[in-house]
Length: 240
Image (tube, rainbow, N blue to C red):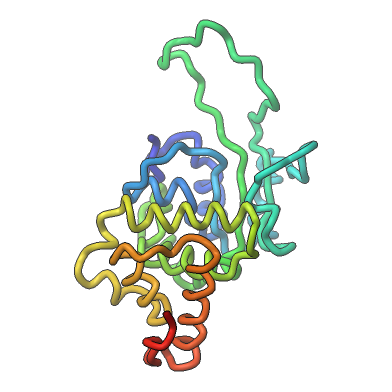
């Protein structure tokens, strides 16, 4: 797997945005894979400070807008509220390319950039100030969010996701991977890095209590409501 700290062609959009003063971090499989999730990389998902400014810069560099494809099914981002994401195709994109047989050796394969999905930092509840600080503090080619930021965001988005959608299914898989495959979530003190209203969810997930499925979601939503109203200090013992 290629990780976001490399200078691979996959992350060209990250570098273009950073060079133009637009903070961004990788998201979904790229970020989770960096921390230990066993995954294949698909579209490149980026959380950005401004979708419109990001798209404007990339369009000037040869990216093109992807509106939709015929009969698209199971694309999770299509379940998101309007204006919270935008899809682009890179300059070297080829739709349905002809794949040679037999496949060429790896040394002869030309790396290509993937389909790009720009996500609003507001939707994922990622502070824009944090994105900007990370962009200034780290190397130009380091685009990985802190794990606690990623976990807080995925938990919140999962609990807020529309029931029965492909978005909810994907978020369930991401959250499950957080606690089944990423060792850092089990480290002492990790819970203290999370938002107080997400710590009960975190403890339930670590303990093996199911957090997947509508009954578990309903329970976790009730717990979060109580904790949100009490700055994370309310009793939830009555919620079974």
